[in-house]
Image 1 (cartoon, rainbow, N blue to C red):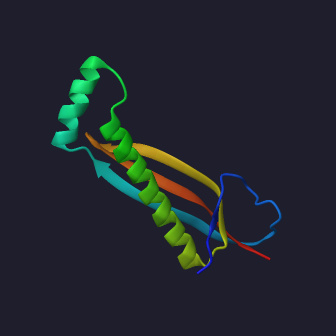
Image 2 (cartoon, one colour):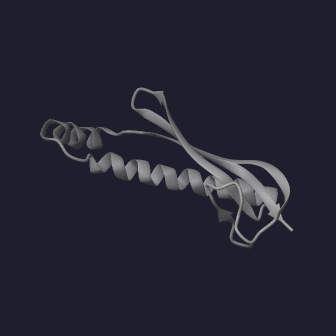
Length: 107
């Protein structure tokens, strides 16, 4: 299987888009856990980066991106253009990371 090009731009230099296959998307919903919350609470008191949440968010973004690529592969895409990431709170302590873009074929 070919490697899919992923870009936030509308075009890929040196490539001509011949077909738009649709939206490729991937998401994950993650919640905090009590262990992380305890450390985060302490960090909040003294200040600084809450590394536990940074790692959780980074892992969530990566998983959403991987799911988006898988979705594009199912569509037969060569690339995903105009990629965007968004996040939203689903409930107290849980948020969704959504990765989406336009799956395309090249000539």
